[in-house]
Image (cartoon, rainbow, N blue to C red; front, side):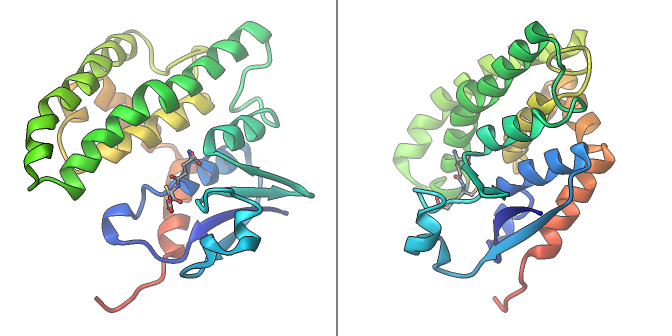
Length: 215
Ligand SMILES: N[C@@H](CCC(=O)N[C@@H](CS)C(=O)NCC(=O)O)C(=O)O
């Protein structure tokens, strides 16, 4: 049975955003059952876990002796098992992979820079100075994404693919603000993807796995 690592506990602001969600969503879309390895406090930094994930992060994916880290690589591996997630013709596949990299490489870092400012450093002078420039980088990419998604429902291949899982889970990191909502086609795209039953099952499963602790 496939096994995915996840945190037993994270603070509320991170619930529904932790990257095992991407893996759960892809597995749900592909119809592949999985177990979850819930990490207790400190377990991510044990030698045993670091042997699976060198940076002590989630998710780790285990399947019949295969161990993978990096959510993008894990999603590509899952997508290779299911045409639901990845078209089989070479050109379409290459384009979907390009959008996977785009979500992780051209969008996620800029989105996370804004998140880092807004959620962890909003009161700092450096953050106030830096935010407009970081916002501008996100905006320039959102303008392009909004234009594309105004013409087509999904990023590539004329249908939902694994690239959409990555893009939407990246964009969800901005749920604390109205940045995505300012771009109607982009906003509709996120909602369209989040309305998929597989997403709801994945999100419910991640949320159900978190342990409640007294504040
Ligand atoms: N590039 C990695 C990033 C993994 C990552 O940042 N995971 C976070 C949770 S979403 C984590 O484990 N953070 C704890 C830490 O970095 O110590 C991937 O996509 O798998």
